[in-house]
Image 1 (cartoon, protein in one colour):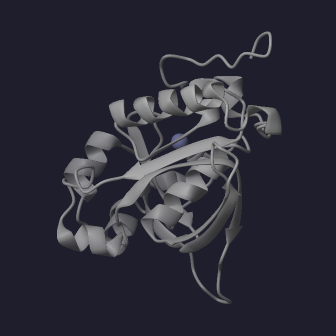
Image 2 (cartoon, rainbow, N blue to C red):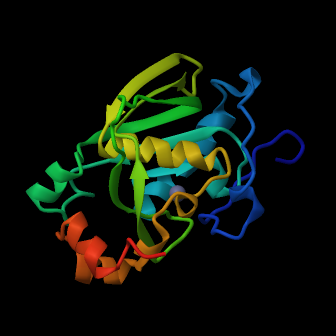
Length: 208
Ligand code: ZN
């Protein structure tokens, strides 16, 4: 930001840029409902759709502000089989922009995390198994400043955890099972449709 104006990158910022490693600042009340914030969010939505991806956080356009957008559509999931969609609990997420999101993990006692391949537009070309909570609650405000609360489970909960992590300077590579790191190509050709057990055996995940 310069002279009070929000400036953003035309392209998605890649890992290695410090903006992806610093906690983002809350959006102040003076920005809520302004065309400026709306324009930033429009730019984020455009970048997410062009990538294409299912979520984007402010720091990914070089803006250290607590704003996330998410959207998952049937079209985006068209490469997945019905079983894969069901297994990942992947369901449509309408376009949602959340300002100053606060995430609460709704984890039952003894509940184990869900483990699936996850990737990031700021770490292009790679994917890795990443444990996430099955269910979350997210509160925040809309870009207009209206209170917003939603609970999500399965894939949408994973997207929310991934995007909110960005606001803390955390990337999925900080949480991934590091031995499962694959190029996107290898993940697609070798492990698509395979069980977690098969991936674990194939990549010897139990070894250090
Ligand atoms: Zn990301």
